[in-house]
Length: 269
Length: 210
Image (tube, rainbow over all chains, first blue to last red; front, side, top):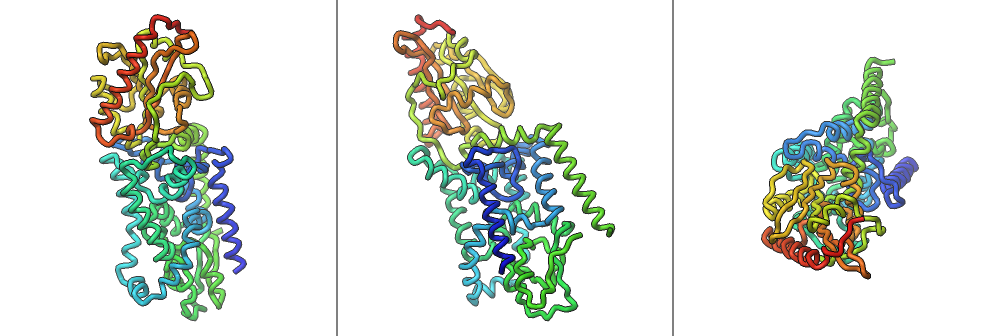
């Protein structure tokens, strides 16, 4: 429990450092997680916006392609997808909505859907989101994901509207973005970490690094009682006893604190 | 040390080295800051600024008008078109502007020309903030009269009479101009340009550039 409290404190501190633009600190770095530079308090750029810039309408700007990937690569190689569990403000938001999602999860229909054999394939949606809406549409037709992004709506559009009353009106992307935003909110209340599991394009960038990262999770399967406590507490819905460097693992450590045998551990190397 | 750990450390060193290299040699930090963090793409925030067409003498912080504006004002009003590479609103406005002034240029060009509108000369200057020079770039915040900080942005500078002096007098329009169709956008720009030409003709005799 104390460990999870530490993680919460860490997430809160990171949330404030993400928003140091509020005190005038604007940098030229890209976040290694999903957060929008349109937020009036944002310190840095969204990595997706840089990637979209790099391929927009068949132009290729290698700097905007390589730069965010190097930042994500650095954190990916060091800690895998721990950024999602420890640093991402949208992860913090979903930690808040997770309580409701965990109650919904107990409903028989939700259990049936959660155990559906298609569920694991549905997780590949985020890779399609990344390739399709960040790269291909930007490259081929000049449509960028940022224009309809629900996170941009949450941390960019709404704060701007609140801070500048009467100064802006919705544009032609607003209705579509609003529908996607509502679906995003419904999703994160219905499925714990639903955005991270199925749709987050930055999560899709970080996920493969779990296979090679220095920090990772290990389960001592020989001593495992298969009580499934770890899987039940996992916010990403991973079958923890059978995982090995699972791309979905966000290294939140809930399985570590939940395991009665203490056989799930953080490992280096 | 295990072979796997050594490979991980090598990968980490390579990534870190390349990252530092990009910061130092490729100017990636400055480019990201200037092109993504500090300038808002108005279509990305899904909003349009509610602005007025009212002309004003006061630039932001009362900074002096740049030389390329004051000098060209001897020939007629000056139209400044601010844009960037990746921006849906800029894509909407780009063909409208080209058609309005009957000119051809590429989105990534630096472009200026003297164009004719309603038999008056207008100096048209296209400023793509991603591909421009410092004096042109520095004029962007100067004319951001409603403190929007977003693109696309259009500034029309004419001449006005102020306390016994003829001075540059401007208005700035933002985004896709907060009207629904391309025809409405063209009509709005024509209206503002016509007004700027009328004011210019009334005041040009008394203008002396600084």
